[in-house]
Length: 291
Ligand SMILES: O=C1O[C@H](CS(=O)(=O)O)[C@@H](O)[C@H](O)[C@H]1O
Image (cartoon, rainbow, N blue to C red; front, side, top):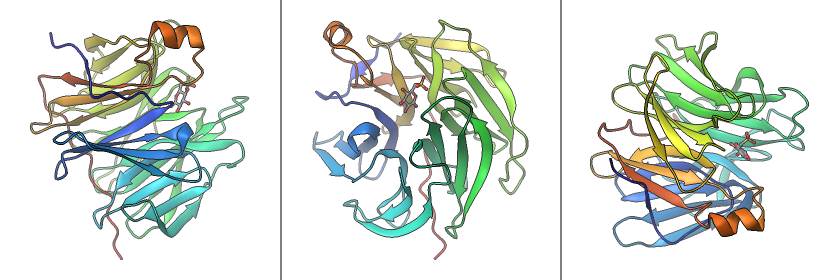
């Protein structure tokens, strides 16, 4: 079985939202807590960092170039260098208490972004969506930490997870992509790791980063564990597919809230790993803008 390899000599603070750009042969990702979007060119090893003024929860590449990016205060369009060109909406959570977290595009190029309820006293986070006409809509409530967004290849399901609540949900999608009522897809018992960011492969299997679980798992559409891959770090945060054949799984990890002892014991905490897998993954679509 293939082993995870380190992508390059880098460890971040809270890397998330890995996003493959096929035309550039580049991996993009955020470091949420460092207010950054990173780009790494897998051909010439060039590494660029774009700085923002607030935490970057998640982003998607835009068809028109640049990014749609969920900062703490709201969602924005930017150019390729990160310069804000348009504010799309305010953060519909209380931005003092909830920053944006996981997000991405659906199979029609709309942008979803969820928040993370900082105080943790109740499920105060939400999931919102930006349509191609730049209107924003709150789609789901009753979330502690929005995560695990992925869309099935047949456009029938939206998957999400709520990491602190140790649960993956799935939500049926109507033909026009409108979500119905969410249902529990899989719950995790204490000590198993908790479901963080995710991606879906061509066989409809859901790959989940098991935060605090030292591994990633591939789940069948029925929720059975088909594969598990161990990592030399405790907290993977998210996965995405890329590479020439879409069979490279990129895995972000974190060193957030880790003490010096753990970082010394597991110095790759915060690194990005690659894993060669047998089944190709679904590409992330770019955000479409109708105007
Ligand atoms: O997505 C995230 O999840 C983790 C884990 S947890 O939900 O707090 O258990 C969190 O540390 C991180 O800040 C967040 O981005």
